[in-house]
Length: 111
Ligand SMILES: [Zn+2]
Image 1 (cartoon, rainbow, N blue to C red):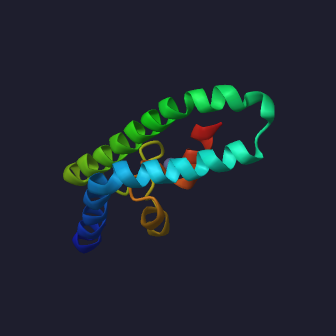
Image 2 (tube, rainbow, N blue to C red):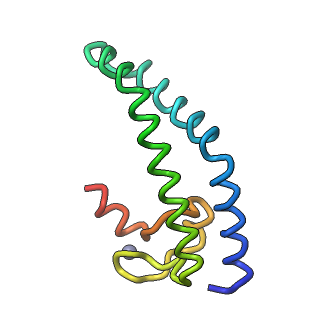
């Protein structure tokens, strides 16, 4: 990857690292609120009980991923899929700059 692009992603990631706590909380809150309003009534009690836990866990996970992505920039492996070693398309990195996988491997991971 060209240095100029790499710097751009690094800036983006550093910004995310700074703001992520607040932004992620807001993001997750929206997702969770949507879930509750459309979800089944049976699971409501346990859902609200787990909310804090989920929030904390996801925040931590995101921070980790951003941190790892910055480490990969240092190592010079940023933009390369951890699983299949193919180049991750820039359009994907623009959307999710901290992703360690290409779309194909991400899907396999989610299974
Ligand atoms: Zn891959």
